[in-house]
Image (cartoon, rainbow, N blue to C red; front, side, top):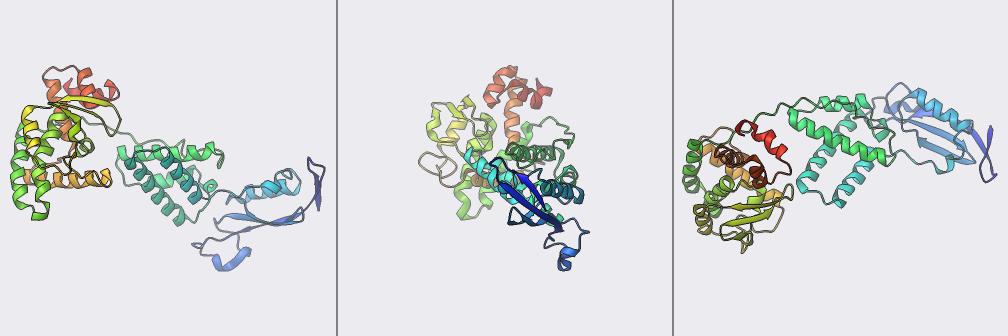
Length: 365
């Protein structure tokens, strides 16, 4: 039995403490009890200190580290902390607090959705490994987690950035001492220039709108009639699909369109061709102010619906690798080919810097 002197001059009597592995439900040695120590389950300490029973996780699976922690407790090195020792935080608790912080920051729903997907994948991986505490995740464990991703180079690079953001959040709150993914290298990303639609492809796409309307069932005929105006706005305004879906009539003053882009919040002022305006005016509105959705519900869900319609349209037109963003690329490239300065094109696209424009459209500058 040991004693240690606390700052308030109280004497604490410390009993011997014992180590044991608390087997996880996935551990094959679950029924063998505390006597079985040769498995990667978390280590716990059991005994009495200061007249009180202690039965806590040490937040590690390493036997040597656990022994050092117990010796420090028994010899009084941590006796001033034993009454206020905090349980190690679990991965689930850390993610709940992190997601609450994202909600408080009012991030874009699409961004939050990507973090929720990462949370789900990480929890499934950790459960499979039989781990539960944040402090149990080291660089080897997280490297193995990263190696199992099926994403492409760019998507994996973005996912790694989100993973680092999660662990930086944990480090700042002192749940862990260091970020276990800071030394993981991002995959090499080879950015190819985005390809615009050719004039021939644009002709086929617009021609396929009539076929689309004929093949669409009666309950989807209204949106099919809006498809031509939708395509022309994408092509001749350079807006992202989310901005077109969310477009309202009050954004127009004559043939001039002004809005703050959904993705970056950058103000954009665009002159829309007259023939596009005529098609838009002859198209039935979805609501009093909105052209392409009712204004009720989640914008992200409506955007996915319009992406589905565009994919069907590209199939009918025989356009390979058709994507809504290629209309934006076509808008930018056509301007550059006519000699419009890249600074002006960057403003029309709503880019925060001309370097973003150069990265995507440098071959046409």
